[in-house]
Image 1 (tube, rainbow, N blue to C red):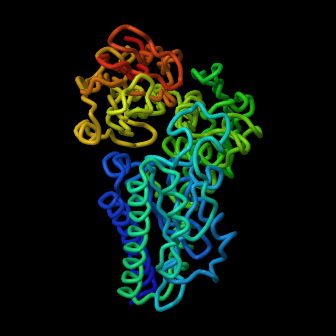
Image 2 (cartoon, rainbow, N blue to C red; image 1 turned 180 degrees about the vertical axis):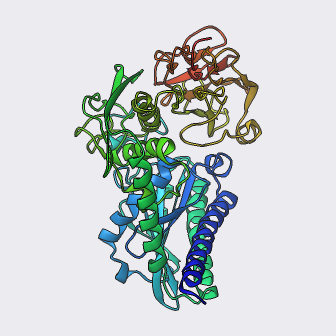
Length: 527
């Protein structure tokens, strides 16, 4: 065989192995989807899964999942290894945390890390994340003024050791949750998906006669980094700024970004952004970094696989204790209100250098409708059914230069809606209506995507509560681009006429109906 043919064969084998690695993490994610107890994971896909080399660098991620989970996990594994060095871990160990500043940004997301072995030798790590329904505290609201009010924080620890559950960990967590069985089930689902992936990786290496993953990992990281840098070097050089105003909580929020493109990479600086809020809408820096880098990658190189190599050329800085880099112990439950707007802000920065190629602004952050009922709700009788459920409201994406915006599509999170039948089966709630909010997309040569309109009532003669923690763009719409019209703002009200204006928790009286209309995306170009 000639040297050229040998090199081609070696490259082909590497590509096959790379694809197989992606298949492994996709199976990892699907195991979690099939074993999860919580509807937001099982039905909406609010999760992530990935594989890492022995240094804790992400090599591949599952397509199934959200950027806020995947890209935060890219750095989260390193925090685990600082506390539990790789050489101290054994088969059957599983590490866990929900630390917002070292995980995925709030207490509701648990990150698990499992070491993978082949014939007793460490070959890498698998990490996975999902959102659980309840961790105690105030619940999924933005009214807390510190993380201590938001629920139980689990520092980095072993959830499993040598295959045996940490009973103390589970006892503490279940004692602090309103839905203990559902939370335990989700965590065991994380354990299962990592375990299956570790088995698949070992089998893959054996099939190809390999003893370790790190050599392939070096190729993946180097190739991805070089490809990302090549894509960046095709962009115009320079610096561009953009700002965006959001509703905020106690006051409107200004997000300010400066994007600089050089031959060495892209840097995004959030100097000028509003200071941290007193309430739980702050986005920890790990979450800010995750969605900012995702926004850059969407514009610059969407086809390059997401891993430590392709993420490395994008760097982010933010003022200390700003709303995009809050310090402990700031409240952070509704961090995606800010974090999921950052890709839209990055797009705004790219509009000038890439004129005619950047979509209009979209609704951005999804609305999580956290609803609960029972005797604890003001005005309810003792016999009222207890429930604690989540539904997801999705707005419209911004129009593209050559196509309309997608309606009811959760960009940038990629999360799907939870079927109404699931929520109705878990509670006495009835969805009277779930339809497109006609006319909510901005006007233009290309119209913005429409949001959804939802009407919900309690079939029992009892009130229920609705947490409006994540509802934004009710005063500041998604802006059109290149002369296109703005999208419609969102609205939340009762059928009886009362408007629910803020991010607080409200009570829907017995016999009344909640109406929520999601914001639409901006239009593109003049009509």
